Picture: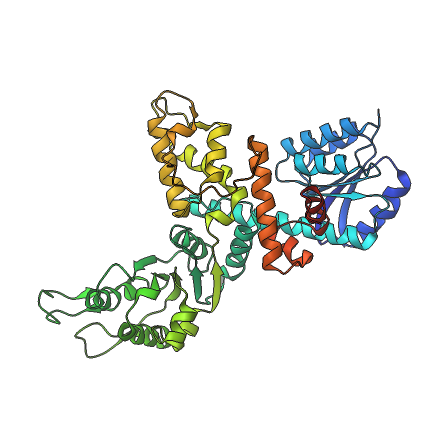
Amino acid sequence: MSPSLPPLLLVDDDAAFRKVYGGLLRDAGHELVEAADRPSARAAVEARAFPLVLLDLMLPPDGSVSAGLEQLGALLAARPGTKVIVVSGAGDTRHSLEAIRLGAYDFLTKPVDPDVLLVVVQRALARVALERQVEALQSSLARAGGDTAMVGQSAPFLSAVSLAERIAASDLPVLITGENGTGKELLARSIHLKSRRHAGPFIPVNCGALPENLLESALFGHVKGAFTGATRDHRGLFAEADGGTLFLDEIGDMTPSLQVKVLRALETGDILPVGADRPSRVDVRCLSATNKDLGAMQQAGTFREDLYWRIKGVEVHLPPLRQRTADLPLLARHFLNQCAHLCPDGRARQLSDAATEALLSHPWPGNLRELRHEMQRTSVLAGERREIQPEDLSFTGSDRPRTPAPGATTLQQKVEALERREIEEALRRFHGNRTHTAEALGLSRQGLLKKLERYGLT
């Protein structure tokens, strides 16, 4: 019987360790490839892409930790999608921190508790699956000619994308929440493209952009003579979305009287155009989005309770950019690549370390929309210069620095200060529960403990 779990690469010169822990992983259902030294490990990685590698640092031919760390860096550079768990007898804190800094998923010190190893492996593979889901959504959007800004590796972002991926194929209504500019319509489009309705239309409507009477006509249509200026029949957006998806953006701005009519259409599938005397039937999946607290509005009586529960089949929350610090450089590069055509030589501009530091210090109230606009602007203003400098950015002295850490002067220090703040905030949010904190930050528990020790938060 073929294994049901992904193949792994176990690199260790200790034959007894490979036998015991290799057997443990095979019993768990994994196909396992083994390597006993650096050359054979390098050959295995070059021949095949493994989602996960368990790597000992002290390997032949020289057995030095520094060479092991060098191989770790080379492996991650060659296979950026691979997660590496360092399992080593070199348990020095300095070595573990360096391995994590290079990009290792976790660092386990021998002897390793078998249950701990299996849990860490499971979490690492879950992380790989999340990142592949993001790539799949990006590919779907690219094939459809849409924006591909579904970019990121931070835990809150991956959590939202994973949930969207799981419910996309169903016909469940979805409520997407988040601040303005976080990419709610983009996520709605990706859900549609991954659904069984992907061949049908995706019809977006901004419920806050039109007054009530025009929005009703836009949604349900009208017949000729229904009101002054209605010179012909008009199909509404519900009818246009028949067989596909209707996206009700900023649904919290809809008036209570119109909410009643939308509720009936969603409940029954029947729509009544303005001025018509008989309804028509449509088959529509409804995705909604809002930047408001609909639960509080429902309690206050400004949003119907029955409509609230009707559209909230599954709620997906998109985090603001200030909670996606780790994604900022990645997103900035993505938008700069999109703006290459704006540059005189047609080549994308690069961010200097100082400019990246400035990005990390900005609160981004406009979220992705603001970042995209900023990268467009700087691509133009940079002119012939290939590298963007802080003076090219539009930030003013009134911007509130996010982490005014004393003594933090280099980019690395600024990044560490940001990381420390995010960990502190997560610890407060989960009342010191380290397990929940680690999950929210996308870390293993061991990885969190190392960061707590590193930043003196123990």
